[in-house]
Image 1 (cartoon, rainbow, N blue to C red):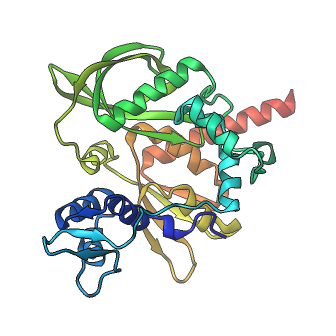
Image 2 (cartoon, rainbow, N blue to C red; image 1 turned 60 degrees about the vertical axis):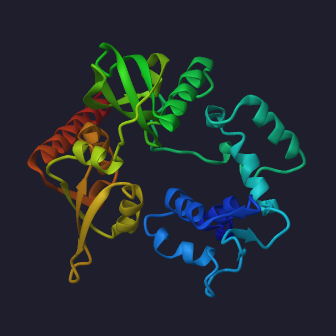
Amino acid sequence: MNIFSEIYGTYFRIAARLLENEVTDEKTVREIVMRDGFRDSVLFLPQKLIPSGEDWGLFRRGVDNMLRRITKKSPVKVLTKLQKMWLKAKLSDPRIRLFLEDDVIEGLMEELADVKPLYRHEHFRLTDRHADHDDYSDEKYIAIFRTALDAVKKRKIVDISFTSAHGKHVSGRFVMLKIEFSPKNGKFRAYCYRLGNDKIKNSGLINIGRIDTITDTGRVFRTPVSMDDYFSSRKCSTPAVIRVTNERNGVERFMLEFAPYEKHTVRDLETGQYTVELWYDEQDETEVLIMLLSFGPVIEILGPEKLREQAKERLMRQYELLLKNEQG
């Protein structure tokens, strides 16, 4: 069952944005489709919006060649009861304060006062998560996160002071490119460029929870950034090669767990096993290894040899700890 209807997806949002104005033109249609759509949307979506005989009939072309919407008012998005219940549940997530101001959250809570949440967080018990997650309710953390998020959205250049994983104090000038959340660790982290003499010095990854101060310099990084090129430069030179069996629904679980990663998968028709080449950020190698080991005998790490040895060392340490506990 889908909570949110597909009619409220990307194409709906593009059409709704265009229909906000009574009059538009073909150039605006193409620009919005290219900016807000998928890579291939520009190949067919403009033809569905611009009057052509095969369009969706949302606009009429005037004598001045401008496009006029056929509706008197702009589209109204109506939420179903199920969607409101989902939203009420999300408002109880402490991470919501990172993205919404307190007055916005209070307003939504008032609007949804008579709505029961779809679920409560105490209904879920997660056993494969780290306990030392970020403190999402800390006011300093919230302020730092919001500043970082604004810097990502507007490509602002910021001065950051933080403590590295090795306890080293680091400070410098950065351009923050993307923020992502690690469900396994419960931490937000930012991909960024470090600047030196107003030029890109190197790329890096900063945990938001390790930032002590972040200050807006008032400047914007205007050099175009290709995120594909950025992540390619951070990608491991040799992929992890993993054999995955379908025991305990292993293939489906593996593909779901590593869905965000670049992969090349080959299936053995005789055994039903899969061999997966998995590329990842070199700085994430330890986290990737922990994720792989969580699958137990369902997978086998075939290579590279360095990753196999690291897996063996971790398994031996775990075995020694279990043996010590039994003897003690």
